[in-house]
Length: 274
Length: 296
Image 1 (tube, each protein chain N blue to C red):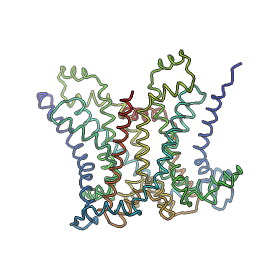
Image 2 (cartoon, one colour):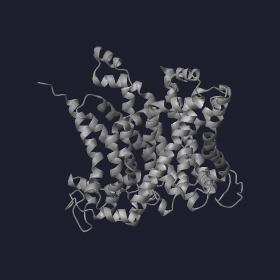
Image 3 (cartoon, each protein chain N blue to C red):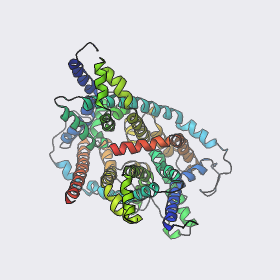
Image 4 (spheres, rainbow over the protein chains, first blue to last red):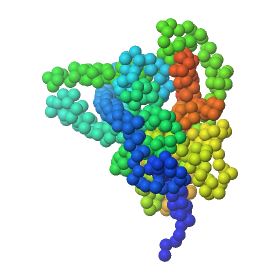
């Protein structure tokens, strides 16, 4: 018979306790999202029926959930395309060539990490306004593309591991430098791109600050701002708010459960490299 | 392009590929930072054409008026909770890196809060913390711990801990995954050697794992501390800085100063102060790391 190891038991107890703490708030939201307004049961109790979708249809109708999903979808896709394109370009130039002023340019990209985007908004706000991008989807897109430079870090780390011989043999075959970038470097940076897509999607989807500040217009609401507006307009209607929370959480949770392996390696890769 | 010499191509690529990213970097990072330094010495109101130079007045206001500097005290609980969060994350990383049935399930569960939308999480916790209907108070009642029941967001002594705990809930798993990554990159032969030498479980963690993790612990601590300095979402969504300003954070105050009271000069000075704090933090941290390396 195997010896019982008390430390092994302690590990299970801790893990189960932590899982309970993680699942407790979402559980309460989940069961209450199905309750009718007049159901006066305890917050822990199961609803009378899990087929009461009334709250959800009210939320979809009143809160423009669908518009806000499509807005954030557009912002994420366009920002990611911009990040991937510009990030690989910078990494190719800084990772492959030596030229005058390279150290300065590299340094200015790296030092920018020290200046948190959030502290410069007072001035950035007037720049966006004067570009005529206030209250458009392009304001946040430009900020997600231009003001965040994590991608340059990640790509620079990855490009080091692509052997220079690949470039050299392509040059012997007479390939242009642009072709080397587009058909050798860009495809080989794919793992870095995957990391980037995961990290940025989570960040942009969860961001409140930028959409709140730059797109107050109702038609431009994204998921974060929609739920905020909905909750403050329907205060104390808990089952409604729970339904709204559930509606915007379900898509990400499903994606997470399917992609968890890639998300983990993305977060791990981004951290170790950075 | 193939017909051009590699010299010309190189030049074209360097200029062509760097022009846009560099322009963006200047417009959205360096120009704002420099302009902010200038504005912090003026009384700029955000719309009029000219601003008056008022010297160090804005900085004097920040450091002498407790209305402004006092809010930093509200952020201390975030630091405390953040440090605890890192220790807990490290502990779970070590647990979930060891042999354990269902460890992948636990990893998935503990990381889950990180992918949830921050605003949705904030409202979820409004329901947890609510005094009369909140699930936390009901749970305490259920366990017979009525004496611990609280007005979690209404008590000035507790509100910042309550808000910081939301951050704990959301980011512990994220920190844990980063620690896990670091643990997995440690060479396994090191552990085998320790085992052969007869080192026990805790001894191995203490003298082998932790010393090899200092860099990543420092990184996580920096992220935690700079996160604590720039807290925004939870008080903004849940308390609006209340009750009586007890949960106001520096960033909340900056936004209010700029966009509600149109005092962009003062708000710029506040941003600069925050920026300097972040830089000081970085410098101290680097000094600590280097000092340790030298002592070895």
